[in-house]
Length: 495
Image (cartoon, rainbow, N blue to C red; front, side, top):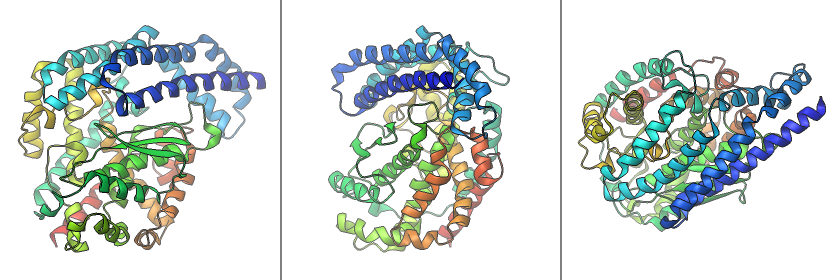
């Protein structure tokens, strides 16, 4: 029996190695690859994706699971080996429903679509991207047909990112969030942030961001930061974390974007070494992963305690801020102000961007919106939800990278992450009663260490619901703490 477990681990490690190698190629494609490498890279990624899928869905994996299950059933529920067998069983049973040829084609078209999106966004030309979007949507419909669902064809796609959650459950959360957020936005005071709209050299932004990143709990030789068209984080082990961001000389949004990606990176960095090269070496869901990117970006990075330490260094990097008092700066970076771009959105309006995309994705999948009409529908919904006029496709339907790679089902996890972040934050504050003083002193390690020890190190050993319950005492995703936090913030800004 022990040999079965050892062989299972060895086979899963090989699958992990192939997938991580494909991840390196994907990172390179989005960061350093010359544009004309697109077609060759698409073929390479497709080949590796097919190999990883075939190796993982091999019937021998099922036989090894059958032999290993009796060996681990007496272990504690969260023991590494018992968790490995349980989580691998679920992943294997889902993956084997998908033909290897379909998986390879999805990977191929995702790689092609990315380059097409980069160029279409640069030229604000949705028509040039439309054929790639049509292909990705059709592939996702074929993927959905591999599964059964109880409430919506969107659920198998959502499950890829938020395992075990139903589309109807997301709708319930968003039905609470949407009206409450719209009301908060309507009540938010206007705040002058004109001083944040010019004079920020990209080199200085990078220097300041790297200075902050160096204090967040990373091993200094385990991460790197690079520019890209659309910020993201990926990792190839818990000691190889790749952060990306983008810089605009007319704003400082890269600071929060970088802290956002660093939150993802800290999650990957904090996963226990014992889980490496296995299906457990990740977050239980993207909602939980996003809860940490939003924690570091907003709960830390927009909080007054953080800036009590870091505002002086920021002024050193950007002399134009020297005449701006700390209170004025903090109010400006916490304002609620509807805008066009999701990744630059404030905390209060951000989830409205997500609700728009969640609704559109379901309609795209079901075919109730002709794809060629998507820009017009997008623009109308942006006006309805956020009251803004979209000037062009680059600032509208083409702003996000996700659909270029077939990432339908991903968007809801951002708003779910916002909600979960406050549920966990309430626990953190009880565990670290001196947190504000630590942040004001520039000491981020107590927070980073607590999150690593109590959340990140678990990897995927528990389901999303089990992980939330272990931390908070309740498995439910509850919008109440998040809405209370935003309500308090808006009230303080109006005072």
